[in-house]
Amino acid sequence: MKKYIVSLLVLFVIFGCEDFLEEEVYTEFEPDAFLQDQSGIDALLTGAYGQLDLTDFGGGRDYTIILGEFPTDIAWETGGGLERSVIPIMGFNWDPTIEYFDGRYNELYSAIAAANNVLLVTSTVDGVNQEILSKAEAEARFIRGMGYYLLHNLFGPTPIIEIPDGATLDEIEVIGRETARATEEEYRKYVEEDLLFAADNLDFGGVSSRANRGSALALLTKFYLNNKQWLKAAESAEEVINEGGYDLYNDYTTLFSVDG
Image 1 (cartoon, one colour):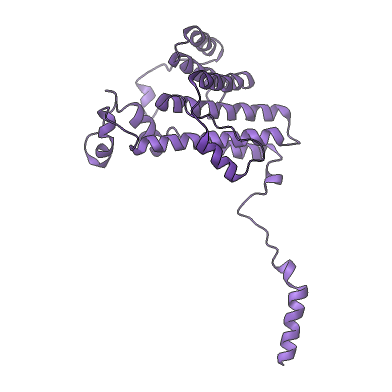
Image 2 (tube, helix red, strand yellow):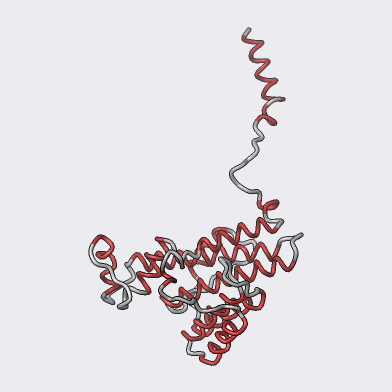
């Protein structure tokens, strides 16, 4: 009986295991197949937009409002645990240990990394219409440009991270750790080129959850204003006003109601 069982086990090992252990994976995508059509590229873009977190409880309240409005008389916090952690910001008494700076820095570079990943895919993918790829590249460069724009508002020129094709994880780690701050001129040129590319390759598209020509030109206007490039700011703002098809909201108070 024992010999019979052993013989069956040997036969099973030789002939039965390979097919039995080939499992179809449902919890992740195969990149070579997934990134060969528009749906795959859109999914990557959605992830990049998700990293550029501006309006939810974390990104909106903890970063945009706390770092942008709490040092002003527009917003403040009284009482509770949040006040304890934001008092240095409200009092212009911060230092590098404040968690909100670290969180915002990491969040925006995550968005930039996601945008760069989209750009890497669009430069290598085959079988997708060039118009679709150009639009995806334009959206990714808008995300990247906005990420660097927001970083500059808080930290001045930060490192511009460029990852070469085929870089290993260890090489990427070294690049991220050792890349020095860009100069002000390098930084401005880089952001401007990204936003101009986005504006040139997107349509106005009205009000949209995705980047369009209007949002790229509007961000360019703010970028030029921050850098005191008055003529360029006026030109890009004028294009949004005259050609974008946008109107001011009829009733300002209603804008902040449920109906608005």
